[in-house]
Amino acid sequence: MTSTSAPQSNKHKLPSLLDALIPIFALVLMLASAVYLYSSDSSYGANQIALIMAACIALVIGVKNGYSWKEMEAGIVKSVGVSTGALLILFAVGSLIGTWILAGTVPTMIYYGMLVLNPEYFYAASCLLCAVVALSIGSSWTVAGTLGIALVGVAAAMGLSVEITAGAIISGAYFGDKMSPMSDTTNLAPAVAGTDIFSHIRHMVWTTVPSIIIAMICFLILGFTSEASGQAGDLQLTMDLLQTQFNPGVHLLLPLLVVLVLAYKKMPAFPTVILGTIAGAACAALFQFDSIIAFVNDDSLPPIVAMVKGIWTAMFNGYVANTGDEVLDSLLSRGGMSQMTNTVWLILCAMAFGGIMEVTGLLKRILQSILGLVTSSGSLIITTLATCIGANLITADQFIAIILPGRMLKVEYTKRGLAAVNLSRALEDSATITSPLVPWNTCGAYMASTLGVATIAYLPYAFFNLVCPLVSGTYAYFNFKIEKLEDMPDLEEVSA
Image (cartoon, rainbow, N blue to C red; front, side, top):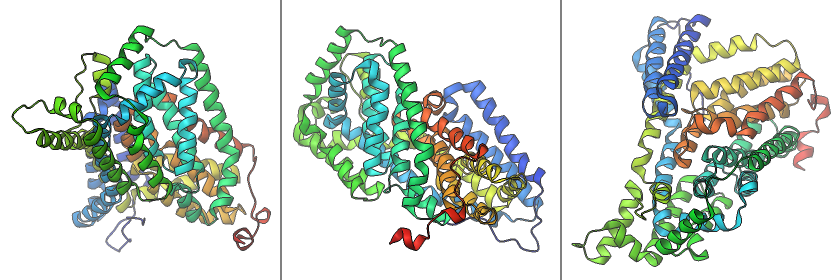
């Protein structure tokens, strides 16, 4: 991924720090107002307007500094292009959820989850399960889109907090993603910093493991101090309805197995999700024929045609449950590409704002000013953490939040005699970890729409994502586990 910044020409005036900060302050003010007025619904239109208005302010400043509309438009197009892969995955996940519910895959996961998961250990167990799977396949998005939706369903059926559950899912998924050598970000960060992946992972252990331990303790405390509101009779009723509607069985977990195997084999996310959707459609056709006919509810159609229509509808418009139980119906009425359009709208607006900020040099101006605050090795690492979090907020994409600060700060690390693993770890401890905590970031928008829990609602419970940057900053402040260049083995020796 390359920077979208346009090269400076004689007609371009260098932006002042005030120029760069005006759109940021305006955006913060508008987003705060949106949250105040609309609460957790702010991402359903209010945040989008705030981002577009802030982009317009940045555009005016760009014109003042000599940038033409064509130049800024090119920056927007390039920035939006960066998010195209994420948007395709979002639409594909919408179809996957719809077909997996229709096939009985999600209901089966909920059914077995209610059988084996104890409410007292549920949050911690959810975090651990997601961590193990994400570590093995290297994808937090895949874990959230498969196990995550089932665990949220189990929590709701048991009367547990879906917000805490979403925080546990994201904590575990991002721990596994961060520590997996198969993860995109775990490969990108050392590549940007100039080190090898295994030295990078070893160095991350010092901040990542204490952070996940703290998170697990928090989830255990919440589990033992919270009471599940679901009564035994209600839970049994839910399980009976699942049994009647979908006839849960291990064979219905085949689509999940397909996705996990493909992810483990490092197939790209989009085709993996599409093939998982096709597997779900096949399972629905083979094992849920009667349920599909009931879902379509159109006696004028021949059964085979009705089956095709049911699967097709689940792909683009999701599944609508009609079990007679309000809680279960709300759990299973989900999915479809159409349900992802609001999230896509949010991401497009965020990327447009980030594209203008970058192409007009406003983002670079902010980063340069931040670099001027560096006075020591520890402050450099803390500055890196803050810069990457800020980039997540401004550019709305974790990959850009890794690449831009990484490239700009790399030389400073070398000047101060710091090994590249310090930079790569700081990039991951901030850019990767905090991306799902930003509602308009591609990761935050994905998690909210996939899990059905607003970013603002799960944010306080994403303990791992909140603690890890703090642990990393504390290490930097006390100069603990900071590698010097002379302490590191030669890269050729490492690869040998």
